[in-house]
Image (cartoon, rainbow, N blue to C red; front, side, top):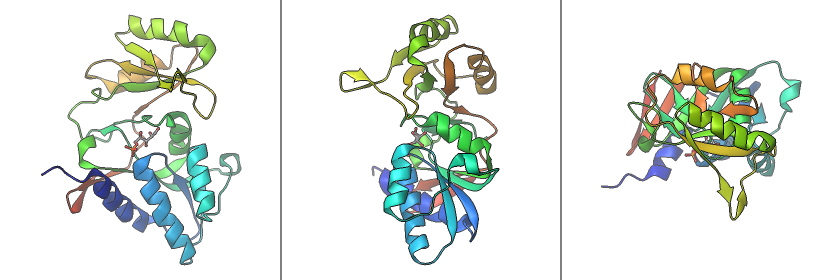
Length: 225
Ligand SMILES: O=C[C@H](O)[C@H](O)[C@H](O)COP(=O)(O)O
């Protein structure tokens, strides 16, 4: 039977929001899984939960505002207690590819400030090795040709993401280059190497940033720590 992936995301979200406590600062992720978490947080706030949220994208900010979740500007916070976000791929040793929705840069900044990062996914996201999902890489438009050549020299075939007939623009006004490295043997080494390329402002490899993945699976959930 084909799994109901949206239901699995929802189950994972419902489990993750149980970690939230009063007076916490909570990072609000981006994407279809994170939407379930933000909606669940909205319901809890309506029932009296006191938290302040830090959104990882403009669209999450708008959703949170529509649900009356109190928000903080990231530049007003020193640390975030807990963040709930999605992923495009994860391994059981908690490495991720993120950025399918183009929000990877803000998501990584929020994750870097976060004490407990919880990733919620459906059962299609678990992989042995990262890399089937093309790695989203954020580049400043001025550098896109240069960066793509540099990626090519490192074995990565990149394509600029489009929206209609125009390049997709991130919340920072940058491009996303979806890059095929094949299956990635050493994600930490690649992450390190990518950061040496001028004009490349972020990439979707999340290493050592995640504390737990909660994966929906059928009618239940499974946790990886
Ligand atoms: O840029 C988007 C984010 O990294 C998402 O968390 C990721 O793409 C997973 O999205 P979804 O929950 O829709 O599968």
